[in-house]
Image (cartoon, rainbow, N blue to C red; front, side, top):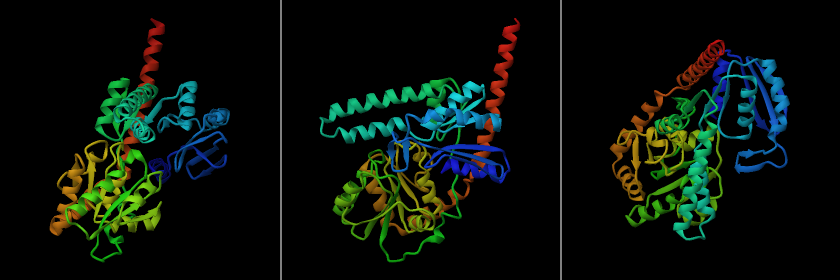
Length: 381
């Protein structure tokens, strides 16, 4: 989504922009100032998520991508993570001696650890924790080595900025996320039945910690709450578990467009228990819809929520339950947080986000030029 928004920003400003990505078919085309090259993944690709795959043979496209880059003559190359497309981009940036910018979008080290914990659930807890922790550390180490290649690194929160800067020695800058406050708006609400709706939007996967929703429902019921339901939007391997164990929940599957906007607006509180999100744009979309969010104290979402104003940052299940019950029992507090959430979202525009991205492009070019001059002087000396 962020990459599509960046391409749209370049198109709106008539900036020359070449977007290379994986797709079901290989083809090249132009739309205004934007050039596109889509590349088909091979049959040996394996699925990482519902809408994400990795092709170990993707480098067979190197020649095609190289020809397109020579034709386009870019000033800088931007890669968006450790994936098959970006590996090709990083290699060709090195081959063509072009400045490289890398943005961090996904905490793959934490995702892998969470999935390992689920897969190895039949083992003793202490053994699983050790294996997951080891995998998380090694994957993070490998990611840091990968991000040594860019001249400038973009990350969505200060914790990641510090980790990447300290680990790579590279310049690291903040790249937050914007939100469409017209698409996501409280005006899209179309329910008024008195039922308190707890919403979740995202992949129904282990790394999203979605089983906490089951524990939250049990705790709310034990505390005497009955007039509520969960609105669960998304797909994934944990859906079966949630459907089996949540007593009062509506599952919509994936939603987009107007249906997604309405679903957000129909929530009263957004409950997001993920501990692995680098940013958590769904919390921001909830805010734009006038919905306060309760998030964990791990990962990026805690930087979005203003504790006590636009929602709450929870340390554990007890906090999730306590804050949820507070908003269920205090309509005035809930309404104040709804207004504050909407106001907070209104101040976050995509244009300002991408202006900073283009600043990073210029910075990467300047660093490369300075290094070239330094090498030339050393050669003369």
